[in-house]
Length: 112
Length: 115
Image (cartoon, rainbow over all chains, first blue to last red; front, top):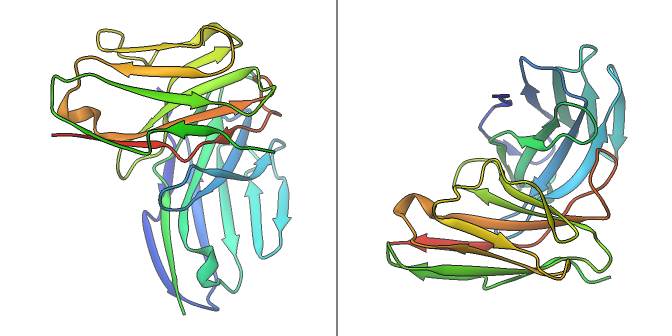
C-alpha cells in the first residue's frame, strides 16, 4: 500500500509570511498533483508535476518535484488570507493509468 | 461550462438505514470517480467508471456499497445498510478520460452523517 505523508498537518501564520508544505513517499510517483480544497467544496487542481527536479510556479506558489520523484514541496511567498484552505498532494503510481493516492492534507490558516 | 453537480449536499441518517447520492458529471466527460473523504483525511477512491463500465472498484466495500452509471452519464452511489464509520463527504469527480494528463474536476460533495 502506497502512503503519502504530508507535513505539517496544520499551519497558522500571519499575512505576508512565507511557508513550505511537504509531501513524501517511499515509492516513486509517475506524477504528482497539488490541490487546494476550501470548506464545503471539492478539491481544485493547482498543478501537475511529472519530471524529477521539475519546478513550476503559479503566481506566489512554487511547486517542486524531487529528483527521485518520491517527494514534493509547495512554497507560498507572502501568504494572503485568500490562501487559507486545505492543501492536498496526490501521487499517481504505476504509470499514467494508475489511480491517485491522496495525502491527508495540510490545513493552512492565514490571518490578516 | 457547468461543473460536476452532486445532490443532496447534506444527509443525516441513522445506522442501518439506506442512502443514495447522485452525481452529474461535466458534459462529455467519459470518466467518473466516486471518492470518500473522512474528516481529517484526503479523498480515497471508491470506484472509477469509464463510460458505463467499471474500471476499478477495488476499494469499494461491496457488502454495503454499490454504484452504477447505466447510461454512461450520471451516476448513483448507494450505501445499504449504513454504519457509523460511513460518516464522510462523498465526492464525485469527472475527467475527459483516465490517465495522468487528464484533469479531474470535483463536485462540492455530499456530507453524510450517520447517527
